[in-house]
Length: 320
Image 1: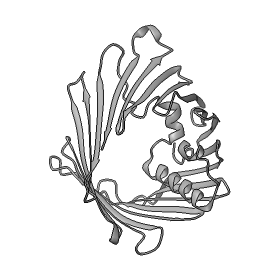
Image 2: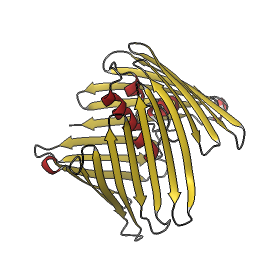
Image 3: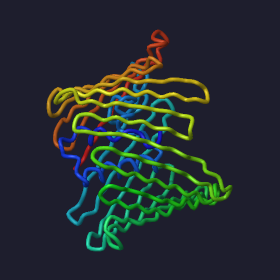
């Protein structure tokens, strides 16, 4: 769901709802909207680990490894890989990023084992404070597929906005725009996508929310058909809980999810979730040492407990 709940890491921040805080929250809503990705609160309910790599019980189907590092010159490297033991397929990525701070420029390049190359160039806070402009493109030498996107974003105190132009030749230019305003913990956001080739509004989403130091409330309407609401609460230090409700008027389907997270200590935490499909998730995350994090997760199909469709996951995150 677009423009979903404010990331729970902001909701639990013990900070005043200053204008800068509101701007950060607004910017995060914008990022969620333009990426079409789930929110952290949705992930908090729907995923039981930082990397939700789930596999059948008693058999390792897929494992995940990630490594990141940086050099003294400011060049950042990040690599990751996924191995699927059922199909034998391995997927890996390699990304480099370089920043020229005096000019506000950021260059990044990414390659994956599907032989897709991606490049991103961004300039920030130079033409106008809070304004960033960029261009990203991808190219697949095997298929000849090309994509391109012009990006712009503006962030200032109580407002954040973006406007992206997808230049893909196959789908025609798409205009993706978002706006979020906030004041004293209240946030309102709007997201629209326009297909300029067909002169049609393809996405029309609205969200309203409130966040405090230990509480967050969010409601949303997507395309006038999907209605959602979620509540996050930090019960006490180390213990968090959330509930998410969704209803689709087109098929009259209602969904819900419950989730909780408990920090065993500063380096270890456990998570649990259950949803309306009786999918039960459990997760354990342990920081082994500085820059090394291990995650174990499992997902149990409560509706078909005897069918053996349960999943288990393992992830290792390395950072230097």
